[in-house]
Length: 628
Image (cartoon, rainbow, N blue to C red; front, side, top):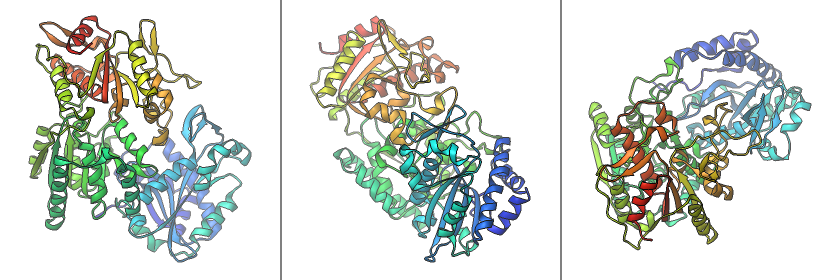
C-alpha cells in the first residue's frame, strides 16, 4: 500500500487540538522516528513553537480544512512545513503551503535570493516556499492530474514588522509577490489569506489525493522543457542515438503492458550523445508515463536545471533521492540515470541517520524505483573512489533481481568538432601503456601546448573575444578556499607569479555550511560557466563536468606526471582533493582516478583544447605529440 508522504494528516480541528495542547511535537517525533530516525532537538522545538502559533491563526479563521505536516516532495528528501487543503470559493480543491520560520531578525544578503540570519546565508523564505510550489506544480499528481490549485506563503511568527522591513525590499519583491511574507502582527492578514483560498471547506475529503499522491510530471512543464532543450541542433537525435531512444520506448511500453521490469544500459564515450538521448526520453515518455531523470553530477544537473528553469528540479533529481527508505518500489515507470558512471556504492552519506540508512547498493535502489531503469554511462568517467558505475556492476545487480539487461553501444562522435579521432587520441594518451601515444596530426580538431599559464589564459581569452565560449580548468592540485567575508575569492591556483582563483564553492562545500544552495541560474557553477567573471576563475573536475565550451584551457598539475619508459604516474601528495587525500588507494586505483579526471577535462572543448603542465617532463612529452 502507498504510504503517506506526510508525518501528520488530519482535520484542522484535530490539528488545532494537538498543537494547542502541546502534543503535536511528540506525535510528529514518533512518526519521524518510525520512518527516518531520531529528529534533532531543534526540529522538535520548531514544531512545538511554530505549529501552535499557526494553529491559533487557523482556529481564528474558522476554516474547515485538511492539514498535512512535513509533507515530503515527490522523489526528494525535502519536506514542506505545513499544507492546508480545502475547496475555494469556486468549489475547486486548493492547497496552501506554508514555510514557518522562528527567526527574530534577518538582513539582506549580497547573494541573490538570500538573507543573512545569525551570520549564516539562508534562502529568503518566500523564495524557498515558492520553489516548493514550483516543484509540486511540476511533479505531484494532485496538481498535474487532479488539477488542485496551489498557493504559497511564509510566516515568520517571531519577527516584528519593523524587523522584517529589510527583507521586504525591492530585490525580493518578485518572490514576495509569488509567496507573501507574513510576520508577527500579521495574523489577521494571514487568516484572510487562508479564507480567500480555503473557505469552501470539506478539506479532509481532499487530503488523500495530496498525501498519497505520486511523482507525475506536468505535461505543460514538459512542453516547456522540450522547447528550451530542443531549440538547438545540439539536442537532435541521430543514428545510434535514435536506435537507443526507440529501444527504450519499446521496453517501457512492454513493461507497462506485461507488468514487468527491465534494465537498459547505453554505453558511449564523451560526446556520443548519451545526455541527448536522456533528455529526449524524458520529454517523450513523460507524455504517457511517470518518468524522472537522475544523476550524481552536481555541475551537470545544475546546468540542466538552469536551462530548463523554475520547477525543473522535480524532473532532474539526484541518485540519492531514490534511496530505499524514501522510495516505494516501481513508483516510476521509467528512471533515466544519466552519467551513471557516477553511481556510488551506497546512497548512505557520512551523517545519514541510522533509521534512514539503506540496506541496498545504490544500483539496486535505482532499479527498484522504476519498472524500466536506463543507465547511460562512460566507464572511464568515474572520478571519485566510491563511484562504481560500470556495466559489470549494473549487470550483476540486475541478475540479483532477475531482470533482463539490454545493452546499446554508441560510437558516433558529436563533441570535439565531431572528431572521433581526438577522443580516441585522448583515450590512448591516458591509457595504461608506458609507450607514448602517437602524435596528433589531424586538422579536424585543434590541440596545442602552452608554454606558460599566462599564454594559456591569453589564448582562451582571445577565443572569447572572437565570440566563442571558453573557460580554464585544472586538476585539483591547489587548496580550494571558501569565499572571503566580502565575497571575493582567494587566488588559490598559483604557478610562479601567475595566480587565479578557483570558481566559487557551492554552499554545502564550505566549512561553515551556510545553508541550501541558490536557484540553479544563480549557482556558483552556473555563474562560472556562463557569466563573464568566470573567465578569470579556474574550474575543477566537480564544477566542469557537465559543461562544454568552444575552447577549453586545461592545466595539468603534478598529481599526474609522465616519465619516459614508465608512463603515467599518479602523485597523491600533489593532490588537494579530499576525496583523494583522505582515503587509501592502491597505485592502480589512484592512477585510474587521475587519468579519468584529466580525460574528462581534456574533452570539455568543442573545437579547441589548450594544455599546460606544471611538470617540465610532462610538458615536453605533450609538446612532442602536438603541432607547434
